[in-house]
Amino acid sequence: MFSEHASIKPFASRMDARIKIFCMILASVAVILGNRAVLVALSGGCLILWSLIRIQVRHVFRSMICLGAMLGVIFLTRSLTLSFSWPLAISWDAAGATDGLMTCWRLILLMFFGLLWLAVTSHADIRAAVAWLCKPVPGIPEKRVATMMSLTLRFLPLIMDQAAATSEAQQSRCIQNRRNPIYRFTKFSMPLLCRTLETADRLADAMESRCYSENYRTPGTENRK
Image (cartoon, rainbow, N blue to C red; front, top):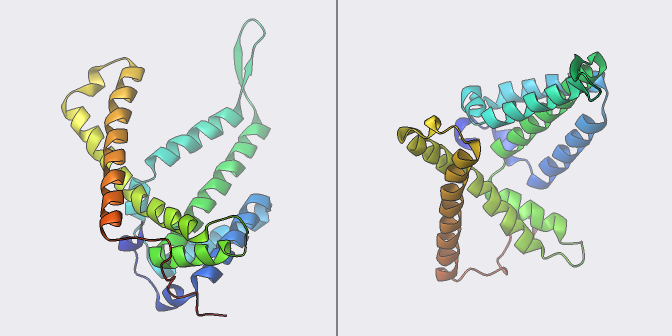
């Protein structure tokens, strides 16, 4: 998703995708369960990795405006306390604000580690690694799950581009003059949903016309022990 904005180091790009997935899992567990000192250490490591991979930060932050709004809502929800006794009052909770900052910190670290993983791992490697990890689990069609994850990763930037195009088209038609937020949301979500479904239909037709089958050969992992 963000690999076009990165200068990939040869070591990171050549590393086995399964090792990178395990590293990602360990980093995620450390972010979720770690204390403040662990988060400081992980933040420093994340910054070092970003400087080595040379991801262009401005492109990343342009795509994360919605995440920033969500983090703001989480922080305000944890920081403000509403008293339901009359008269109604809103008070500031210092402990809640600290907890909100920690929660936002953890979410930001998870996001940046995920972006690092996507920047140094191709879609084919991710698909092969997911299929290898799911293969020992009974009852799970590993190749179907791997294909679904690969398609999801490919669809995310496309959906974001379609959302941006839909928003620009509506702003050119002065949708911002409508005061009803439900009307604005409906006029934004329905065209976006229709375009996404149409793209999915075209992709399914293209895969079917090329005789796609789940019994493909997974490159890079089947012959490794």
